Every structure is written in C-alpha cells, then in structure tokens.
Image (cartoon, rainbow, N blue to C red; front, side, top):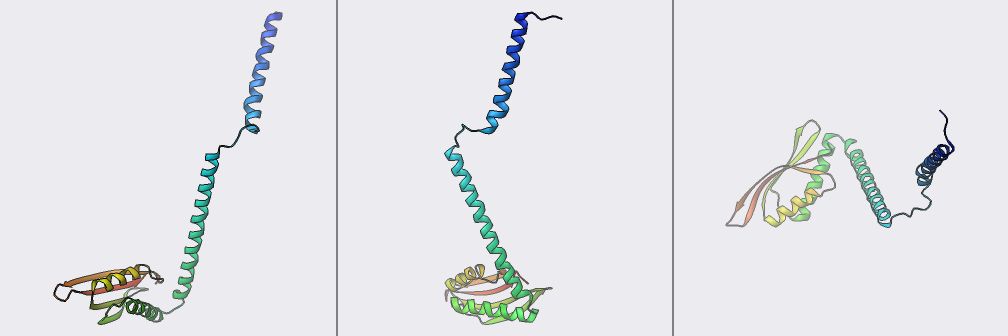
Length: 167
C-alpha cells in the first residue's frame, strides 16, 4: 500500500501531535514546575502534622509514666505493695477530709490487691475523695461503692473497695 504525499503529511502531523501530548502529560505535569502550592492545603497539612506530633508526645509521656509506675510496683512484694496502696488511700482520705471508721487490706485475686473503707461523712467529702481517686497517681479503680443517705444528719454511710490497676 502506497501513501500519497497528502496522507504522509497527515500521518506525520498525527504522530507529532501524539508525541507532544505524551511529553506534556508524562514529563511536564510530573515536574510541576509552574504549579503553585495551595495555601489552604499547606495549612491543613501543617495542622495534621502538629496533631500527630502532639499525639506521639502524649503517648510517649504516658508510656514513660506507666513504665515508672510498673518499675515501682512490680519490684515490690504483694505485702509491700498493699502497704503503699493503703498509705496512698489514707493520704487521699485525710487530704479530702473523709472520715473512715474501718479500713482493711484485701486480696481480690492473684496479683490484685484492694483496700476496703467504711465510714460516715458528708457528700462533699465523699465525692471529692472519689474524684481524687479517679485522678490518683497510682492508677486506682473503684471496684465497689455502696452508699446510704441519712436525711436527719445529712450524712452518707459508705462502703468502698478501691483496687490498683497496676498489680
């Protein structure tokens, strides 16, 4: 099959057009030399990066705190750990003005110790103490709480079992 001069010109033009499109799509667009960076996209990327760094820093801080608490408690015997737990809870009770009539150390299960408290106090002291327990440095957990209100004396009789999450 023989092409005429006109067909050769058309085929040449088509091939040149395809080559130009190829160069434009795969070379020029890949280089991105003339494309400006969108400011909002850049700010969003920075915000996400700061957020990730903040999460990583908090995670590291929590891991270090857990490691120090484990090192402190896991080196103690069960009796020593129980005494440390009892001292910590007594200090919190005194700090918040919680009157305790009876306290005892309990062994809930293997490696889990707890302190049982009973007494009668006003509601402000009890709830302040419970809030302090939730934010305590030892990682305390309220296992059981039983309260009976006395409307005449405006006090609360309570029974409370507090355990530690680290043992």
